[in-house]
Amino acid sequence: MSRYLFISLLLFSCSGLWSQEITKNFLRGTISRPQGISVGVNLAGPINKIIDGDRTGFSLISRFNLTDIILFKAEAGYENVSFEKDSYHYNSNGSFIKLGLERDILPKKEEGSRDNILVGLHYGFALQEQGSDYFLIENGYWNDYSGRIGSNTLKSHWLELSVGPRAEVFKNFYMNWNLHLRLSIADSNTSLLEPYIVPGFGAGDKNFVLGFSYTIEYLIPWKK
Image (cartoon, rainbow, N blue to C red; front, top):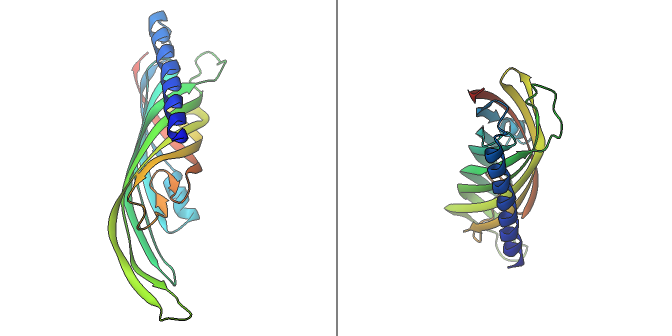
């Protein structure tokens, strides 16, 4: 109960501060830098595939400016896991979406610079199907037991704090890396089989997960 109370207070305070900042910037007319929408790819999925060959994932991201220092960010993707051990087989297929706000905290910029240091708060949701085609329970006294667990659907919800730099390397092309602290706030149907990986979140047996992302984006400006 205390965890959900803390989460509610965190969401309320952050949303209040950000909404005040957005309102003040609009009223003061401080939208001075080029505004637009960016689209890009998160390379964390392919990098995870290199590190752990059992995982396959990919996601796209998009950002757009609400003010010169407040951005809205969305990400959607998928992650699949499949491996075989001596005592069990496991497979999972799922997709995820994340939505949230980011604030540019870079204090001083050179004239014409569009570099950022972004701090964000996001909500994440994942839907996945998982199962085990084979498992073996060894018993030194009775006979060993083997079986299978059919496919079941899981839903996961989490909050995510992120921070990292974003730099314009060429005109309208950006590179960005972030550290993410993810907090699981709710899940369903995990009693039968605990997920090995929750798409977009990470390890299924942890409530707190530290992750990273590395993105390449292209900005489509709509205001100059």
